[in-house]
Length: 191
Image 1 (cartoon, rainbow, N blue to C red):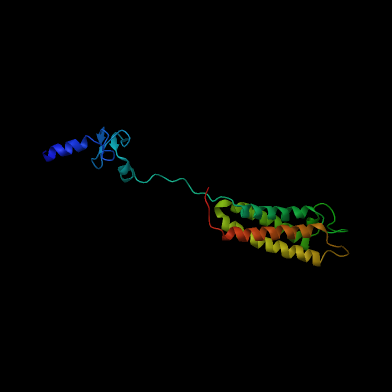
Image 2: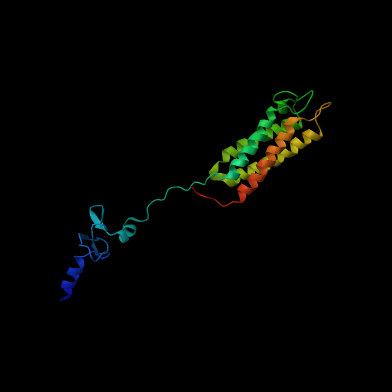
């Protein structure tokens, strides 16, 4: 058989599936293509192997980090610390009513309440795309809330005793700090 006849016989068969009849040839490499392998592209036909070479890599969807359990627990801790400002911070006198953390300015209870709300807002503003920055804001804010709430229990307003608010704020900030440390250390995951 002459060489021209061999190429014609090979072109009549799919290069990937020799037992199938060729319906066309690849515009890029010239191999024979069966119905399964032929991909119509821009008025021509390409083989599966040549599509990426001709068209380039397809665009990839954006990768969004997922919110893990630690991220959610950071938010829960910051919400608890912020909600503690609505509780009574003392049993009698200044700070003994609803929103007791906001009663007297300047005071440790006011500082703890304001820092808890500010930390929550900073954490929410960071969002999942800036997870590590949000975790850092939660850790820093949580430490400041803890210090302020602890000072409110050690040095409450004159003739008062600390009550519910500072202890809830400390518990919420401990949860937020622990979860934020775990969250800041974990690798990024995708959905």
